[in-house]
Image 1 (tube, rainbow, N blue to C red):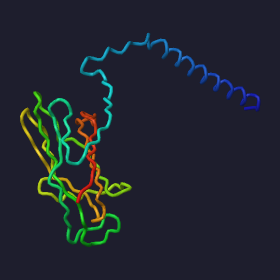
Image 2: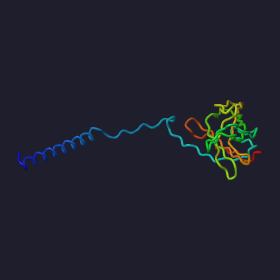
Image 3: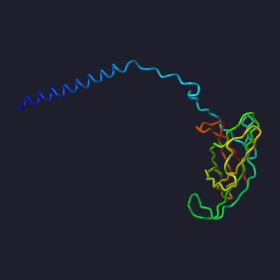
Image 4: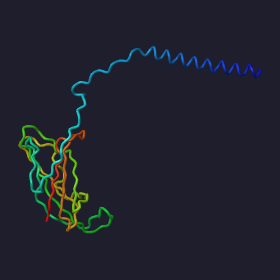
Length: 192
């Protein structure tokens, strides 16, 4: 085959490929038909906006009412020492001081309240620093739900040196999809 014949063969093959792919794309586009409208979502499928709440701050000894008969309060503050605990910063074993308290929730409303899905944080000292929770209490799991007229409680704690008397404990209840159900509540004050 001559050089000219070789070039002609390659050019013809490339042209055939281009025309073939182009025809295929055109045919594909024409057989697709008009766009099909998506069905309207049902009421159950309609995305609801995530509620936004203004955070609430109350004193450590206050009870907060969310407005529908659901209340939360803290009690039984005490300072304790975990003997042979593991320092969360250094990893060393030593006697570690902490503050513990009881969280009490009550449902005086007409509907059940979900209470088992929550986030919580603890800050100690001034200026505040975030502190870990050793979960040393005897009942550290919140109740899953509260029926009307029912109460529940659980133990909370927070690593805190003896000179760290300022405590900020924040709790927020949310559903299984992590959508907030109530505003975050921060309990703040001094502990002996």
